[in-house]
Length: 334
Ligand code: RIB
Image (tube, rainbow, N blue to C red; front, top):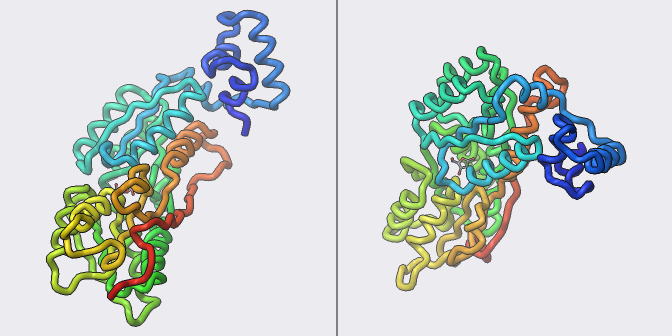
């Protein structure tokens, strides 16, 4: 699908100029109008009337509410949404729920009051009252990184069960058999799905065991505390799957230092999830499960701007990808 940005690049003008040619040609020189219109014809660009209609009736803002603005994964989601929104001359207002249903609800009510074009959200809670109030006010809601098949909301997400399965199957292929999964809170569906995938992988190996180490939050600090417990344990696991890269980085910090007595990956292999930029440059480059975070953000805006009742896809689910680095290299030393 030819975008406004494609037209802008081909015509050698800004996205805003293309938008003006489409909406306010009187603001643009005749020569530029002619050049842009010629490119539109050559590329076969078809404007998205839903976007213009939405814009005509409301602000140029899209609300985005994420679980944790401190997590690079969500920063990438926001970057993708912002890039796609800018192609339509729209802006993204970012709110961080920080795992708080109250903060989430406050952002949703604020976006409803501001009559934003729509709201993209990774929900913290399963209390859908605030989301339904948006829907009732005619403000479209797009779920990001979540699915709710039983609800009417369109969604874009990643198959986290497959992701958990990929992570632990990789550890098992590397000869590891005492798998620890650093997970939690289990109330986060993405976490529960990754754990389910991990269990399915272990179930395929009669000589493998799985231990779940629950944490209160998916942060580096929580990972470090778990890593310290693993370092001091008598019966250590020979592999760790951390359900996101922040946890994995914390575990690595607690294990991979001179004199720790534990080598990564020789004694304990380690894999994370998200493949944030930082994962490749940790002291022992981190294996991870890549999520197309920026594409999640872009696609969420596409879903928002698609015809509300259009026949287009309503539930888009991307597949995760295994990224192998040094933290899971070789076979177990045990
Ligand atoms: O917010 C917890 C996790 O869920 C993130 O690290 C990312 O993996 C998301 O899917």
